[in-house]
Amino acid sequence: MPKQFVPMIGGRSLFDLTLERMAAIPGAAAPIVVTGAAHLPLVSDSLGDVNGARVLVEPEGRNTAPAAVAAAMVAGEGEVLVIVPSDHLISDTDGFADAVANAAACAEEGGIVTFGVTPSRPETGYGYIEMGEPGRHGSFEVRRFKEKPGWEEARSLASDGRHLWNSGMFVALAGQFLAEARAHHPDLVEGVGASLGEDDHVMGLGPGFSQVESISIDYAIMEKTAVALVMPLDVGWDDVGSYLSLLQALSRDAEGNHVDGDVTLRDVTGSIVMATSRRVAVVGLSDYVVVETPDAVVVLPLSRSQEVRDLAERAASD
Image (cartoon, rainbow, N blue to C red):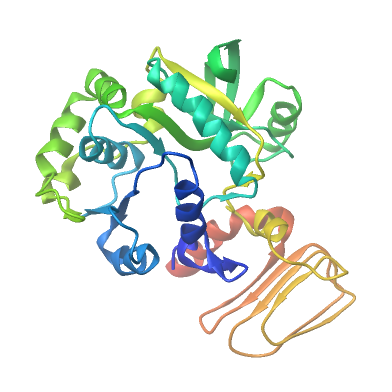
Protein backbone atom coordinates (compact mmCIF):
# COMPACT_ATOMS: atom_id res chain seq x y z
CA MET A 1 0.00 0.00 0.00
CA PRO A 2 1.40 3.47 -0.84
CA LYS A 3 2.77 5.13 2.26
CA GLN A 4 0.30 8.05 2.15
CA PHE A 5 -2.58 5.66 2.96
CA VAL A 6 -0.88 3.78 5.80
CA PRO A 7 -2.16 4.87 9.25
CA MET A 8 1.33 5.51 10.60
CA ILE A 9 1.08 8.78 12.58
CA GLY A 10 -1.12 8.37 15.63
CA GLY A 11 -3.38 6.05 13.66
CA ARG A 12 -3.85 8.66 10.92
CA SER A 13 -2.61 8.44 7.35
CA LEU A 14 -0.45 11.09 5.72
CA PHE A 15 -3.22 11.57 3.14
CA ASP A 16 -5.75 12.35 5.89
CA LEU A 17 -3.33 14.76 7.55
CA THR A 18 -2.70 16.48 4.20
CA LEU A 19 -6.44 17.01 3.65
CA GLU A 20 -6.77 18.53 7.12
CA ARG A 21 -3.74 20.76 6.68
CA MET A 22 -4.97 22.13 3.36
CA ALA A 23 -8.52 22.67 4.62
CA ALA A 24 -7.15 24.74 7.52
CA ILE A 25 -5.62 27.36 5.18
CA PRO A 26 -7.83 30.48 5.33
CA GLY A 27 -9.90 30.83 2.17
CA ALA A 28 -9.07 27.35 0.89
CA ALA A 29 -11.48 25.84 -1.61
CA ALA A 30 -12.33 22.14 -1.69
CA PRO A 31 -9.43 19.97 -2.85
CA ILE A 32 -8.69 18.55 -6.25
CA VAL A 33 -7.10 15.12 -5.86
CA VAL A 34 -5.24 13.46 -8.73
CA THR A 35 -4.88 9.71 -8.29
CA GLY A 36 -4.73 6.38 -10.09
CA ALA A 37 -7.72 4.10 -10.49
CA ALA A 38 -6.24 1.50 -8.14
CA HIS A 39 -6.24 4.00 -5.28
CA LEU A 40 -9.61 5.63 -5.93
CA PRO A 41 -11.39 3.63 -3.17
CA LEU A 42 -8.76 4.73 -0.63
CA VAL A 43 -9.08 8.35 -1.74
CA SER A 44 -12.87 8.20 -1.62
CA ASP A 45 -12.82 6.75 1.90
CA SER A 46 -10.57 9.55 3.15
CA LEU A 47 -12.52 12.31 1.40
CA GLY A 48 -15.79 11.09 2.87
CA ASP A 49 -18.25 13.95 2.77
CA VAL A 50 -15.84 16.77 1.90
CA ASN A 51 -18.17 19.08 0.02
CA GLY A 52 -17.02 20.15 -3.42
CA ALA A 53 -13.99 17.85 -3.59
CA ARG A 54 -13.06 16.71 -7.08
CA VAL A 55 -11.02 13.66 -8.04
CA LEU A 56 -9.16 13.25 -11.32
CA VAL A 57 -8.41 9.60 -12.07
CA GLU A 58 -5.34 8.87 -14.18
CA PRO A 59 -5.36 5.78 -16.42
CA GLU A 60 -1.58 5.69 -15.89
CA GLY A 61 0.76 7.77 -13.75
CA ARG A 62 2.70 10.30 -15.85
CA ASN A 63 4.61 12.14 -13.11
CA THR A 64 3.72 15.49 -11.54
CA ALA A 65 3.60 17.90 -14.49
CA PRO A 66 0.68 16.26 -16.37
CA ALA A 67 -1.20 15.77 -13.09
CA ALA A 68 -0.78 19.45 -12.15
CA VAL A 69 -1.73 20.62 -15.64
CA ALA A 70 -4.96 18.60 -15.42
CA ALA A 71 -5.75 20.11 -12.02
CA ALA A 72 -5.03 23.62 -13.30
CA MET A 73 -7.43 23.15 -16.20
CA VAL A 74 -10.19 21.94 -13.89
CA ALA A 75 -9.58 24.69 -11.31
CA GLY A 76 -9.90 27.65 -13.65
CA GLU A 77 -7.19 30.13 -14.67
CA GLY A 78 -7.89 32.72 -11.97
CA GLU A 79 -7.44 30.32 -9.04
CA VAL A 80 -4.32 30.10 -6.90
CA LEU A 81 -3.17 26.49 -6.87
CA VAL A 82 -1.28 25.00 -3.94
CA ILE A 83 0.20 21.83 -5.42
CA VAL A 84 1.33 19.35 -2.77
CA PRO A 85 2.14 15.64 -2.57
CA SER A 86 -0.10 13.75 -0.18
CA ASP A 87 2.68 11.77 1.51
CA HIS A 88 4.48 14.55 3.39
CA LEU A 89 4.44 15.34 7.08
CA ILE A 90 4.28 18.93 8.40
CA SER A 91 4.12 19.51 12.14
CA ASP A 92 3.61 23.32 12.18
CA THR A 93 0.33 23.74 10.30
CA ASP A 94 -0.05 27.42 11.27
CA GLY A 95 3.42 28.18 9.96
CA PHE A 96 2.60 26.35 6.75
CA ALA A 97 -0.59 28.39 6.29
CA ASP A 98 1.43 31.61 6.73
CA ALA A 99 3.96 30.44 4.13
CA VAL A 100 1.16 29.61 1.69
CA ALA A 101 -0.27 33.12 2.15
CA ASN A 102 3.10 34.68 1.29
CA ALA A 103 3.57 32.36 -1.67
CA ALA A 104 0.04 33.16 -2.90
CA ALA A 105 0.92 36.87 -2.87
CA CYS A 106 3.95 36.07 -5.05
CA ALA A 107 1.76 33.97 -7.36
CA GLU A 108 -0.75 36.77 -7.80
CA GLU A 109 2.15 38.96 -8.94
CA GLY A 110 3.11 36.41 -11.62
CA GLY A 111 5.61 34.19 -9.85
CA ILE A 112 5.63 30.40 -9.63
CA VAL A 113 6.77 29.52 -6.15
CA THR A 114 8.34 26.35 -4.83
CA PHE A 115 8.89 25.76 -1.14
CA GLY A 116 12.46 25.05 -0.09
CA VAL A 117 12.83 23.41 3.30
CA THR A 118 15.58 24.59 5.63
CA PRO A 119 17.86 21.53 5.99
CA SER A 120 18.08 19.97 9.43
CA ARG A 121 20.66 17.34 8.44
CA PRO A 122 22.69 16.16 5.44
CA GLU A 123 20.28 14.24 3.24
CA THR A 124 21.15 12.28 0.09
CA GLY A 125 17.52 11.41 -0.60
CA TYR A 126 16.43 14.98 -1.47
CA GLY A 127 17.21 17.39 -4.26
CA TYR A 128 18.38 20.89 -3.30
CA ILE A 129 17.61 24.45 -4.45
CA GLU A 130 20.19 27.23 -4.36
CA MET A 131 18.74 30.62 -3.41
CA GLY A 132 19.55 33.70 -5.49
CA GLU A 133 18.62 37.33 -4.93
CA PRO A 134 15.86 38.18 -2.45
CA GLY A 135 12.38 38.77 -3.87
CA ARG A 136 9.08 39.97 -2.43
CA HIS A 137 7.08 38.45 0.41
CA GLY A 138 10.07 36.53 1.78
CA SER A 139 10.89 34.73 -1.47
CA PHE A 140 14.18 34.37 -3.35
CA GLU A 141 15.03 33.92 -6.99
CA VAL A 142 15.99 30.36 -7.90
CA ARG A 143 19.66 30.20 -8.83
CA ARG A 144 19.75 26.50 -9.63
CA PHE A 145 18.26 23.11 -8.87
CA LYS A 146 20.63 20.42 -7.64
CA GLU A 147 19.95 16.71 -8.03
CA LYS A 148 20.26 14.31 -5.10
CA PRO A 149 23.89 14.61 -3.97
CA GLY A 150 26.39 12.18 -2.52
CA TRP A 151 27.10 12.19 1.21
CA GLU A 152 30.02 14.65 1.26
CA GLU A 153 28.25 17.13 -1.00
CA ALA A 154 25.06 16.77 1.06
CA ARG A 155 27.00 17.78 4.18
CA SER A 156 28.23 20.90 2.41
CA LEU A 157 24.85 21.86 0.92
CA ALA A 158 23.02 21.37 4.21
CA SER A 159 25.34 23.75 6.08
CA ASP A 160 26.25 26.53 3.66
CA GLY A 161 23.12 28.65 4.25
CA ARG A 162 22.42 28.99 0.52
CA HIS A 163 20.71 25.68 -0.22
CA LEU A 164 17.28 24.34 0.72
CA TRP A 165 15.74 20.91 0.34
CA ASN A 166 13.46 20.69 -2.69
CA SER A 167 10.05 19.92 -1.17
CA GLY A 168 8.15 19.31 -4.41
CA MET A 169 5.41 21.76 -3.37
CA PHE A 170 4.35 24.67 -5.58
CA VAL A 171 2.06 27.71 -5.54
CA ALA A 172 0.94 29.45 -8.74
CA LEU A 173 -2.01 31.00 -10.47
CA ALA A 174 -3.55 28.26 -12.59
CA GLY A 175 -3.41 30.51 -15.65
CA GLN A 176 0.27 31.34 -15.12
CA PHE A 177 1.12 27.68 -14.58
CA LEU A 178 -0.66 26.70 -17.79
CA ALA A 179 0.98 29.54 -19.74
CA GLU A 180 4.44 28.35 -18.71
CA ALA A 181 3.52 24.74 -19.49
CA ARG A 182 2.28 25.76 -22.94
CA ALA A 183 5.46 27.76 -23.58
CA HIS A 184 7.80 24.88 -22.75
CA HIS A 185 5.73 21.73 -23.39
CA PRO A 186 2.78 22.56 -25.69
CA ASP A 187 2.22 18.92 -26.69
CA LEU A 188 1.83 17.96 -23.03
CA VAL A 189 -0.81 20.61 -22.42
CA GLU A 190 -2.67 19.69 -25.60
CA GLY A 191 -2.63 16.00 -24.69
CA VAL A 192 -3.85 16.57 -21.15
CA GLY A 193 -6.58 18.90 -22.37
CA ALA A 194 -7.82 16.32 -24.84
CA SER A 195 -8.02 13.70 -22.08
CA LEU A 196 -10.36 15.71 -19.84
CA GLY A 197 -13.86 14.30 -19.66
CA GLU A 198 -17.11 15.68 -18.33
CA ASP A 199 -16.55 17.87 -15.26
CA ASP A 200 -17.87 15.88 -12.31
CA HIS A 201 -16.80 15.23 -8.75
CA VAL A 202 -14.98 12.15 -10.10
CA MET A 203 -13.51 12.65 -13.57
CA GLY A 204 -11.75 9.86 -15.42
CA LEU A 205 -8.92 11.12 -17.63
CA GLY A 206 -9.12 9.55 -21.08
CA PRO A 207 -6.63 7.07 -22.56
CA GLY A 208 -4.82 9.92 -24.32
CA PHE A 209 -3.43 10.92 -20.92
CA SER A 210 -1.23 7.83 -21.03
CA GLN A 211 0.45 9.16 -24.18
CA VAL A 212 1.63 12.49 -22.75
CA GLU A 213 5.22 12.88 -21.68
CA SER A 214 6.03 11.61 -18.19
CA ILE A 215 7.85 14.54 -16.64
CA SER A 216 8.09 16.34 -13.31
CA ILE A 217 7.10 19.94 -12.64
CA ASP A 218 10.74 20.75 -11.90
CA TYR A 219 11.95 19.55 -15.30
CA ALA A 220 8.93 20.72 -17.30
CA ILE A 221 8.56 24.21 -15.85
CA MET A 222 10.68 25.27 -12.87
CA GLU A 223 14.09 24.75 -14.50
CA LYS A 224 12.97 26.62 -17.63
CA THR A 225 10.73 29.46 -16.50
CA ALA A 226 11.97 33.00 -15.83
CA VAL A 227 9.48 33.49 -12.97
CA ALA A 228 10.60 30.73 -10.60
CA LEU A 229 10.84 31.71 -6.93
CA VAL A 230 11.72 29.72 -3.82
CA MET A 231 10.16 30.35 -0.42
CA PRO A 232 12.15 29.08 2.60
CA LEU A 233 10.05 26.82 4.79
CA ASP A 234 10.81 25.77 8.35
CA VAL A 235 7.66 24.02 9.59
CA GLY A 236 8.78 20.55 10.62
CA TRP A 237 8.55 19.16 7.09
CA ASP A 238 9.59 15.66 6.09
CA ASP A 239 8.58 13.52 3.15
CA VAL A 240 8.90 10.41 5.34
CA GLY A 241 10.92 8.86 2.56
CA SER A 242 12.94 6.48 4.72
CA TYR A 243 12.75 4.62 7.99
CA LEU A 244 15.20 7.15 9.43
CA SER A 245 12.80 10.03 8.80
CA LEU A 246 9.83 7.89 9.89
CA LEU A 247 11.46 7.29 13.28
CA GLN A 248 11.56 11.04 13.91
CA ALA A 249 7.77 11.18 13.50
CA LEU A 250 6.85 8.12 15.56
CA SER A 251 6.45 7.72 19.30
CA ARG A 252 9.54 6.25 20.98
CA ASP A 253 10.30 4.63 24.31
CA ALA A 254 12.99 5.64 26.81
CA GLU A 255 15.65 3.89 24.72
CA GLY A 256 14.58 5.72 21.55
CA ASN A 257 12.91 2.69 19.99
CA HIS A 258 9.60 2.48 18.18
CA VAL A 259 8.00 -0.93 18.60
CA ASP A 260 4.88 -2.27 16.90
CA GLY A 261 3.47 -5.76 17.28
CA ASP A 262 4.66 -8.78 19.28
CA VAL A 263 8.24 -7.70 19.97
CA THR A 264 10.81 -8.54 22.63
CA LEU A 265 13.92 -6.34 22.97
CA ARG A 266 17.12 -6.55 24.97
CA ASP A 267 19.89 -3.93 24.80
CA VAL A 268 18.33 -2.27 21.74
CA THR A 269 18.42 1.51 21.21
CA GLY A 270 17.31 4.00 18.56
CA SER A 271 15.63 1.39 16.39
CA ILE A 272 12.35 0.57 14.64
CA VAL A 273 11.10 -2.97 15.23
CA MET A 274 7.77 -4.00 13.69
CA ALA A 275 6.13 -7.41 13.75
CA THR A 276 2.90 -8.10 11.88
CA SER A 277 2.38 -11.89 11.98
CA ARG A 278 4.69 -13.48 14.59
CA ARG A 279 6.94 -12.68 17.52
CA VAL A 280 10.23 -10.91 16.80
CA ALA A 281 13.09 -10.86 19.32
CA VAL A 282 16.07 -8.52 18.92
CA VAL A 283 19.24 -8.34 21.03
CA GLY A 284 22.10 -5.86 21.02
CA LEU A 285 21.30 -3.58 18.09
CA SER A 286 21.52 0.21 17.87
CA ASP A 287 20.00 2.38 15.11
CA TYR A 288 18.52 -0.50 13.12
CA VAL A 289 15.32 -1.32 11.26
CA VAL A 290 13.72 -4.73 11.73
CA VAL A 291 10.39 -5.25 9.95
CA GLU A 292 8.61 -8.60 9.78
CA THR A 293 5.63 -9.26 7.51
CA PRO A 294 4.09 -12.50 6.19
CA ASP A 295 5.87 -11.83 2.89
CA ALA A 296 9.39 -10.98 4.02
CA VAL A 297 11.71 -9.80 6.77
CA VAL A 298 14.08 -6.87 6.36
CA VAL A 299 16.97 -5.94 8.67
CA LEU A 300 19.26 -2.99 7.95
CA PRO A 301 20.98 -0.03 9.62
CA LEU A 302 18.92 3.15 9.77
CA SER A 303 21.82 4.95 8.08
CA ARG A 304 21.19 2.81 4.98
CA SER A 305 17.41 2.91 5.04
CA GLN A 306 17.32 4.67 1.65
CA GLU A 307 18.37 1.32 0.15
CA VAL A 308 15.07 -0.43 0.94
CA ARG A 309 13.64 0.23 -2.52
CA ASP A 310 16.69 -1.19 -4.30
CA LEU A 311 16.67 -4.17 -1.94
CA ALA A 312 12.98 -4.85 -2.64
CA GLU A 313 13.50 -4.62 -6.39
CA ARG A 314 16.41 -7.02 -6.21
CA ALA A 315 14.45 -9.48 -4.07
CA ALA A 316 11.53 -9.34 -6.52
CA SER A 317 13.80 -10.19 -9.44
CA ASP A 318 15.54 -13.13 -7.73
